[in-house]
Image (tube, rainbow, N blue to C red; front, side):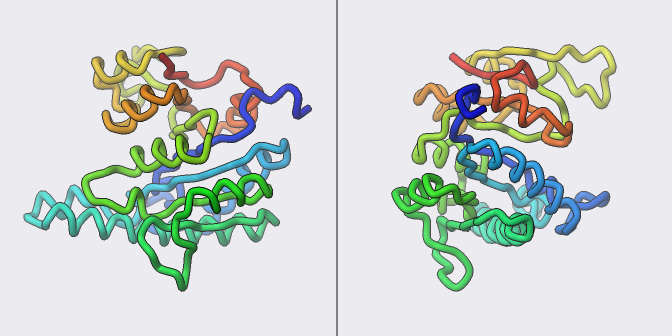
Length: 239
């Protein structure tokens, strides 16, 4: 089966909302368990899995900035929230029998390893799931950018953007039933059309390193597995 795999090392970018319950806020242990089961399924195929998770379920920096908060302060708060999400996800995955490590770009040695590229690669080689918390460690950069950066650094073959929509559309499919789904886009098209796949810095990083971006619905039971085997699913963004 391993011979049929299209991707052997993936970066999974999750929004913080993926851990939230129906309200869209907080951490729901059941949602964390569902994510852990998806990752377990892929790990069973022999795929190396690295993860970056956002913080939208705990903190939205934009709201603070709109009320006059300093941008850097708001961003650091968001980075700390991503570590909380990373720990929740680690706990859920270890309860499923997955050996997991959290590495943080902001040092907090009591709860997470500091981010060290070579150590992260070694964890992946040993079959451990690595969750990167703390964003890039710098304000003014999104977790999309952190995912692209870490993906390039650890040699991931694809950046999988997990959403609750089955790909990229020309308009919001929740609001427009006539919305058209794209099966394939180029990096430049996603930026020129302002499709909101990821922010410009993240897409530029992927473009410069020829790292494909795959947008799919992680909550469709088989979509992630299909993607690993190279089946057509979601929207693929390449050169």
